[in-house]
Length: 380
Image 1: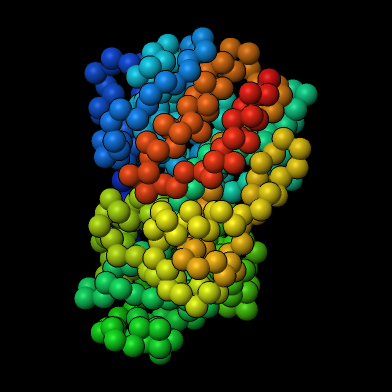
Image 2: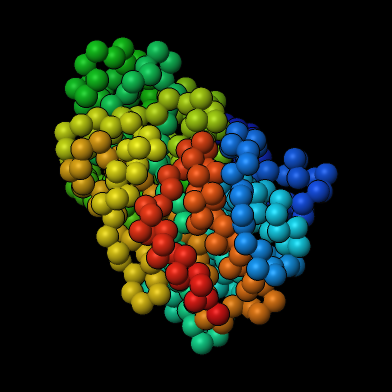
């Protein structure tokens, strides 16, 4: 973890407290259900969207951990699933993609949420706990990564990849820099220091964000994309909720996190000037257009995707992630396998996918969802 600047410790502690690091929803009928939802978001989803979850004899406790990007979606999925499958208790610890994969490869959980596909070394490690098999990536939901900022009086900011890369590498340090002015000629940009915030924990969101910067502006952001923040400088906070809290509190702040956090916090978001020449806002429609251009990257049972950050598709928002559930293709624990398959089948169902649209997530394309369903059926 990077050291925070003096004077930020208290603020970052508040941000850390804003992160709901775990969610445990007891079985249907528990009085605790209304008090244990991640980030308080599930109430905003449409009711009645949990129709026909197939419990398939599932029972017991199902443990998962990882991505904070999907925490709001998982909260809703668990609530809906458990309203019908009352014999199952699903617990998801939103401790970041990196920690989730580590937990999975240590055999502590049945599934991990990650905003980045498994690396070769992580797949090799998974074979130690997936007896006769390995960890695989199952795409589950998509969503835009918002670049959010706190700049009073500026509500329609446009940035391109090069300018954004220079900001997060400390090469552009003032909001009235000529490069920002050129992209926003009519905006009243203040002579204010830019305060960049990045994740302190290993994060798939960071991997996606740094992959975007390194792809579209490699000379301005020459660092190898990673779950751990690779550049120098900036300030750190834990989890997407921690970053959103900093943007909310600090004038001149800019950071990156899932659109749902920006929506919840009523935070301004950047329009990205893309390879098509358009300035595109982070909307679900724009993210859908981007995901549709993704290509398969996994082999065998693995359904990992390759995202084209330099897409020229009109109206596509290129800073979009697909978050995965990581499971064993073979070697799952017999006592949790029925619950795992039942829960995943609900999350990828039409009802499950639609239940989180109002939270800022993007459903999988129908053909990809069908592939995920087929793969879930083969888990052993």
